[in-house]
Every structure is written in C-alpha cells, then in structure tokens.
Length: 116
Image 1 (tube, helix red, strand yellow):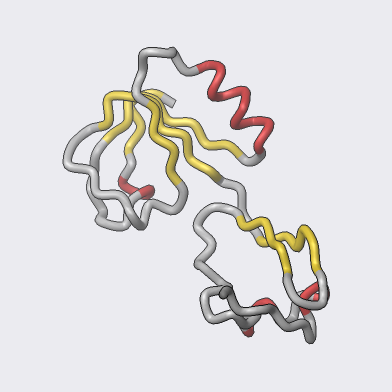
Image 2 (cartoon, helix red, strand yellow):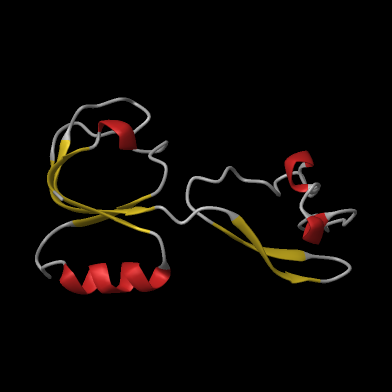
C-alpha cells in the first residue's frame, strides 16, 4: 500500500504515513516482499509498534509482521523452546510457564529452567 497511515501501528498514536507498507503472515511471504523493495529505499521492520515513536512520515517501506501465536518447537524435561510471533508479550522472564499457557496441551504441567 502506498502513502499508508501508521496511526494503528504505533502506541503513541502518531498520525504519520509510510511511503509504502506491506503486511505479511509467513516467513515465505516476507522473503518475497524483501526482494520487491528497491535496494536504495529505507526499510523498517515492525511488530506491534509499542517501541516506536514516529516524529514524521517515513519515506521508505515498512514491513509489518502479522505472524501471531506461540508454537512449542522442542521440549525436554528441563527446557521448552518456543517460536513466538510478533506482538506477543515476553512470557518466560520469570522462569515459569505463564498461567495463560498452562491450558495449552503441550505446556500443561511442565516446568522450565531458570536462565543461569
């Protein structure tokens, strides 16, 4: 999309615009989008927008990740390796599986190790 409003993509609520804006839902789609961006054009990759402060329009291309969810990639007695999509709040900072994940069958009644 050209001349796209970023109002809904930054938590400061700045009504600024991007020269070009693309949203993707898979790694493969992202790879194709990157190939289509002119090599000399600025490129910004964003997720939920909570750490962005725009002070003016962005004169480049913005790639927005719409990859969601949490997937268990690998699990041992001591650790769980997860793949987390954009905009998902950090879930393992305490070393425990958060309550909202306990209802997910792959994580039910599991324990995680604390980082050293």
